[in-house]
Length: 179
Image 1: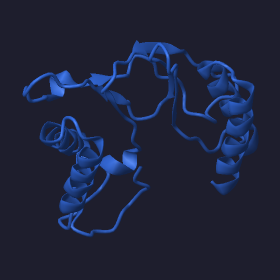
Image 2 (image 1 turned 90 degrees about the horizontal axis):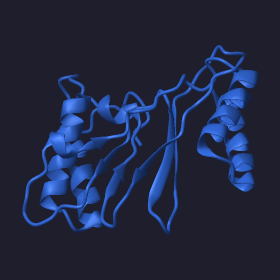
Image 3 (image 1 turned 30 degrees about the vertical axis):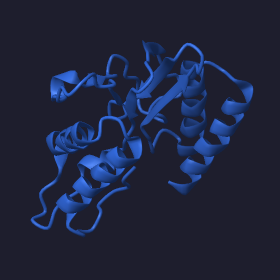
Image 4 (image 1 turned 45 degrees about the horizontal axis):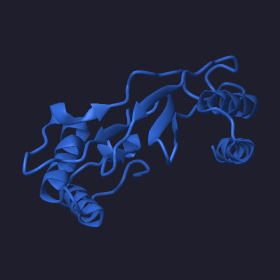
C-alpha cells in the first residue's frame, strides 16, 4: 500500500506540473498504479480542477464516493437531501484495476458561496459505541444539520460538522481513514 501511495504521489506531482486534462491525469495515475501494483491493488480517486475566473469545475471519478455540492442558501430556507447536487454522472474503474482504463471529464458551473463536499468512505464507516456505522444517511444528516445551522460561515459549518461526527462516534475506534 505504501508503494502504491508513493507511485500515486509521484505521478500526481508530474501531472500537476504539466497541466494536463483531468481525465488524462486519471489515466496516467491509473497506469502508474497498475504498473506498481500489477493490478492486484486498487484505489478510488475523485479529481477536480476549478477555473477560478469562470468557476467551472472539471472533474473525473475512479469509483470514489460521489462528491456533492451544497449550493449557497438564499434566505432562511432549510436544505433537504433533495437539494444536494451529487456529482455521480461519471464513474470509471478504480485506479490500478486495468492499465487500459479510460476516464471521462464532466463539468459543472459553481457559484460564489457553494460548498463542495469531498470525503472518503471512512467517514460513512465511522461507528458508535454500539458498533453501528454512521452510513450515508447519517453522514448526509450531519452535513445538512451543520449547513442549516451555519449557512454563511464556513468555519462554523466545519466545526459543527466535526462535532456531529464526534458526538456520533463517542471516541470509538476508527476503522478507516477519515477525510
